[in-house]
Amino acid sequence: MPEGHSVHRIARQFERNFVGRPVTASSPQGRFAEGAAVLSGREMTAVRAVGKQMFAEFDEQLWLRVHLGLYGAWDFAGEILVDPTIASANGRMGQTNQRGTDLEEALGGAVFDAAGENSLTSIGAPRKTRVHVRMSEQTTGLADEDGEWPPPVVGQVRLRLLTDATCADLRGPTACVIQTPDEMLQTVAKLGPDPLVDDPEVGERRFLAAVARRNVAIGQLLMDQAIVSGIGNVYRAEMLFRARQNPHTPGRDVRPEVVRAIWRDWVRLLRIGVETGQMMTMDDLSPEDWRRAMASRDDRHWVYHRAGLPCRVCGTAIVVEEMQARKLYWCPRCQA
DNA sequence: TATGTATGGTAAC
DNA sequence: TTACCCTACATAT
Image 1: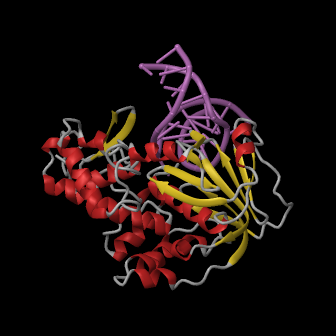
Image 2 (image 1 turned 45 degrees about the vertical axis):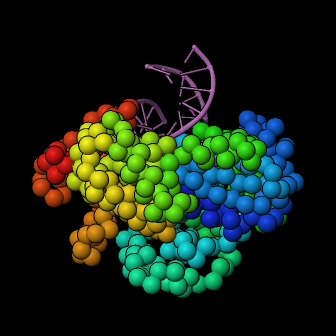
């Protein structure tokens, strides 16, 4: 279920709990037995997220590349060090499913504070909690699951990474391979800019240039990981609406200022997504409207998954169509 | 309880 | 172009 924000969150969790420690690797399912044997016993030396890809380095010479695809997920268990920059969700892992009020707190504090950096760490120093969490779209948790150690394997686990305190189980990934440093760089080189990896201004130039030279619908270009990294089907639909941009306009015909606005919107939405764990695309609502929208589970998007429902702005029925075998939602009037 | 769909991308065909 | 990954969730029965 992950778009780019989820992958960055997972990378941060590995950063805090695995990097700098020796790791035992295994493949309970068996389909990554060979790779797990190669990794096992090595120290994780770095972790990096680029778009929807995550790379974990072992002993400064081997890279594990993981892509979760449509329904892959990492499950963390045991000791979880809470990253203060994503603490709005993690800080309350003892609860299962929070939205509204927690988000509001997060947005009011960690995200929108103009001072930025300082406020992000003000939530508190890292602390140890005993939890079991699932990192996919959202971070939810079951508190104090003090059971067996290591935890029993449940279902199909492609890869289990274990330190003496923390367990991470990978299920259902599209990709789970070991790469040489060279291969890793080649993979990254094929990816479009990621606002959290590349300098945003450099990224903006690359994005503008790539879009301007293509005669392909902007709706397709936003999903193309070679053009820009990390955008998926939800962010695509929402960002096109926020830009009031027709998805079918060829990239080269989209006004440059609109392309620039889309990039800058992605910079913002990705940052919010990483910090809150939510795909918050209605952040510009008034506080009152926002609270009302968040109260209902199906009211979190402008157009995504709203086929046939009235546009929140003009009342026109939202349409859905297939674009590149994915569902595309948009307002034919606002995005005319 | 059963069925259908999906916040993707890869690799086989 | 299609199968696959083999999960989570919503909806139908």
